Length: 410
Image (cartoon, rainbow, N blue to C red):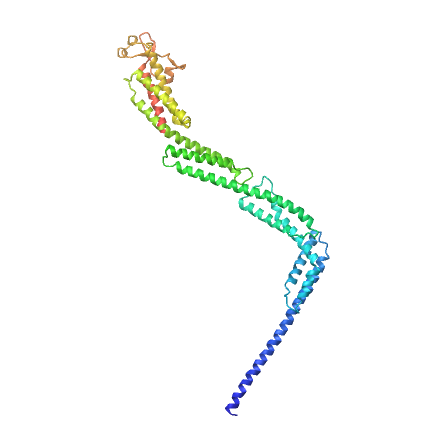
């Protein structure tokens, strides 16, 4: 055989091979098509059997309904999965859906009713004492909206419709309550957070030796914070701690008042201290009386202009010092009126240049010697006296201690 003949035979073999492959593919495709068609027909048959069983069941009982619901859902899934291709049973599937449409619609309606009931369960179980966070309220509201939307889709030609309409009104009314509680909770949380922010701002203002203007601003912020807390109604997540928070804020205001009092009292305490340092045995009566009167006036004016200073511990100490200065003035006035014993009554020569006061002398019904623990001295007639200078020194020393205490409080 020559080369030309061999070359002619090779293409013929290729054609035979292609032909065989085509036959195999056609045969395989045909078998696959037949199998796919049988599957679609089987779907239609299975769905019809399921629908027949489900639709012959009394679904008024919940147990029966659950079983019927499963069958209807499976049947409709099968029927809707049949493709719209001629010869595959699509028309039979559509006929099945149409033939059992009333049953399917009834079951679907009841499914929606039960799902709506499940979704609304938490919302319908709420009372005034229950509290939820904003995200929780939003979740409850979202579920209730879904329940309402489901009930709205129930057609009026199914037996569940009257029941669903009654439930719909209940759910819609409850939605208003839930929405109101959500808004209330959000407003309460906002009020609490804003109050905390104001309090924190006040904390910053009161650091690092603030002046009076800054302290007044801090007090205003805390008072505004208290007003915000007072707007928080009961039945919110923050209402339980709102009362404790008010007490904390009130303590904060007391602390600010203390600082305000300190700033106001600081110049006055310095004035008292300067006066205390100036007192000695050479102090003149009239000068002393005028200065004590002026200190009384200054303290009264301070309390009137800045009432927060009245309860300040420094004010208490200054009042104590003033009482002692007034006591010294009472004793001194007694001598100024010539009622003190002169030097001739003294039994010891070294004391003849001083004034003496009977130990029976009382200040506001309290014996002088008991109130200020001054040393008694007897004269020739065994009468007991105390020296005016010693009395003044003892009183002034205790007044100075009070002023030092006032300084320590600011």
